[in-house]
Image 1 (cartoon, rainbow, N blue to C red):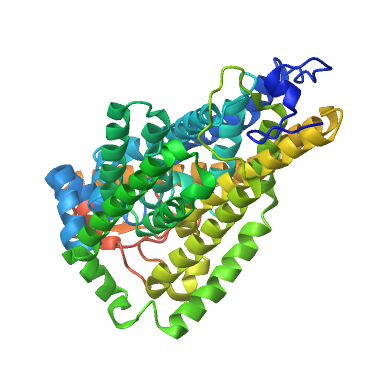
Image 2 (cartoon, helix red, strand yellow):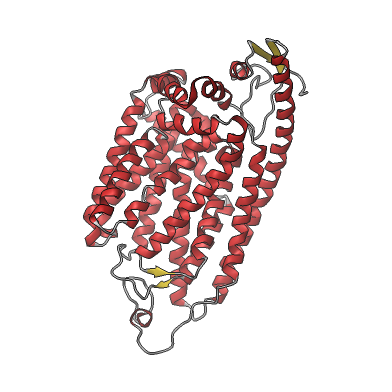
Amino acid sequence: MAVDVSSGAPAQEQQGSPGPRRRPPATSAWVPALALLPLGLLAAASWLGRHVRPSADEWCFLPVVRDHGILGLVEQFYVTDNGRIANGLLVGLYAQHPVAGHQWYAPVSGLLTLGVLWTLLAHLLRRAGQRVPRGVPLLVAAMVTAVFLFATPNTYKTFYWPAASVSHTLAPVLACAAALPLLRARSRRGKAVAALTVLAAGVFLGTLSEEASVVCLVVLSGIVVFAHHLLAERIRRFARLWALLGMAGIGIGTLLLVTSPGSRHRRERYGAETVSMLAPESLSASLRAYGQILETVLTTWQYTGAVAAGVLLGLLARPARSAGATLLRPRPWLWTGLGAAAFLVSGYLCTVITYPVFGARVVTTERTWNDYLLLYVLLLTAAGALLGRALRGGVPETGVPTALAAAMCMVSVLGLATPLYDLGQDMKVRAQRWDRQDAALRAGAARGATVLPYTPVKVSRMLEPFGDNGRRTWPAQCVADHYRLERVTRGTRTP
């Protein structure tokens, strides 16, 4: 049977020639039902967000935003903390509502992630000239969202801790969103909007997250170099221009960041000014650390849920009857190989630039992995889609592989649900203790007290005042500032 080069589907599906036509599986009922599993997991995780309370760095953000507003925090980030202007803006948006902002951050960011990935997949399918049964894009996007947010070793720092999420979880999602105007562009005006969007997004990303910027630079460089292998000729030139504009924007943003007083102060604080990330010993240590990170990531079996979702996508996709010339060239092995290379290279480079700051602790600072883990999850989904397409053309009936892929999605979601439930219980206990202590501190300050005890209330290895058996006082003074006290002392029990 002949195979059409544009989609790998049988020629009779493309051309409508007579003969037996394989009908798509009946999916009207089970696809939405299956999608309810990852959507339900995301909804439950969002509901648990009501137990989030400020901790770690956020103790220091809250009094600044209260006294000086969002722009005051942006100034502090640029001048003192780290130089991340966009980071300060996003942090200020939730920190101006102290507890409520922390509680709402998880559901809002989760919904945003789902919406961006859902829209991105729908546009990619349209641009690739493929159609799928209703509900499949939502199912795949929900699985990718669930796996990305909850398969990491520390879901709290990935999803619930806003200070880390805006830099390392939300940043790659916003980078994906910057590609949407490109996929929608059909006119000269649309292309102009896409070009301006990616330039502005690059500047924003460059002042938001160094690691996400590195990942984007690697991906955009791949588009520039390999566009003639990956994209149709009519879009190739503009795609290269679009990628170069994105790289230029990231370059401008990164220059603003690294030349800022805050960035220099942060490097001095961590001793990174005296350590070259390009020194041979630093590069080799980064490689060893990255190997340990990969060992953890590649042995986390819940990521197979992304592969299974991709397999379902490949099995259920069909060439669109009204599709014109597609924009993506059908070279599956090249797409997969370049995607894998982009993930491996960007992950190592992210480890290289974070090693001078964290040292060997980069292996346990899981929040910094998320900048390239979204690329990993998307790569797994794409590989699964290619596998599903191969199965669709190689077996007479696709019912068995479809059922197996659906079952794997269910198993993956269930594998994510148990640790999420345990984390929710820990968060609930902390929230109860935090609220009691918060009320006691506010009452003491209202009575005129200037020094009060504070007992650390931890969850998921989050830093609190008087950690390490009282030897580490940070951020005790920020807690005192938040409650308008002169200082806090180490407490032995919560009220």
